Image (cartoon, rainbow, N blue to C red; front, side, top):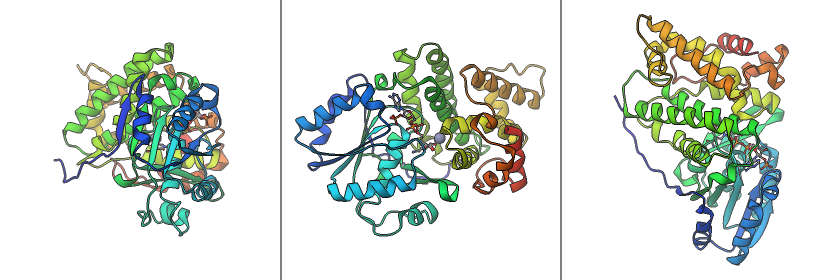
Length: 388
Ligand code: NZQ
Ligand code: ZN
């Protein structure tokens, strides 16, 4: 049965080849000082930077730059950006990049006017902001996280071996996001498929929980089918606009809060993956891929009906003359074959994880209670070892 919920998503989206044209219109809603946040330089190489600067200048904005946001953005970088944002007295933070840049921009948005310790407040105590929030707008260049239409902000503190996501409420969601699938054409294959698996994992971690037959399950099966179909096309031809645009749209719907409404969710694969990244700085989607097979083989018996449904509805497993368990396992085999086909990392050793790191990674793994099986610490270690 669907539980009680409030659904509201305040992010305005502009989608398509011409979507950047709407930046002019949006900029009129904000003051003169714009903090332009971006990553390690891909937007300079592919020309997106020049296009954005031209529009900002045309709108007489004062441009303050904060670049070098790394994948898995660090708390140290956030502290530095907060200072820049304060000096700039920024009226708008414009994030141009992937999930890391947008997550980082959200962290700045709740910290520039905050005089408390932001790591402790947001990423240890998980408090809501009590200060003024600087509005964020985003121009997405890498697909996967859904950060363009949600309140997630994932920040890493390597000295504490913690990679932590705070899911902020709607007042921290980007005010607007511009999604041009062509801007993603230059993303390297490794990052593209990592993003594809991130989307898949977001859907699965909201699908594999609860026993109910609710609308979200049907939406998620549709999203998964579209994603798998488009991923196979994009894997062969990354410049296929239709495939890339469908992947982009699927990513947004996978994690813009809709499909989680009224049901419980799991998120244990993300907890494992984030702990791996806190030790290795590995690419987000690959950390998820590397632990997924061991995790799902560990828990499928506790949610057998749903794993059976997944096998039949998403991977077209023929159920005739098979036990529920055989059907579920065949579904997982097909999922593994899909993952291998698009070139995902299937083992933690390929992300530089070694046996002696397992205890530490297990200690950094949050244990959630919304999935089919609440893991013990020992089970976390087992899954990590099996993933090596
Ligand atoms: O830094 P630059 O030079 O821009 O290069 C980036 C980066 O190296 C490159 N890239 C991005 N757009 C490109 C491009 N290269 C060429 N052409 C382009 N158009 O791609 C690399 C990865 O970028 P990144 O932003 O790190 O990837 P992603 O979008 O996967 O973001 C990952 C981060 O988001 C967090 C992850 O934990 C990780 O820290 N997540 C955020 C979530 C949320 N807000 O809800 C949920 C997710 O589960 C995830 O945890
Ligand atoms: Zn993710």
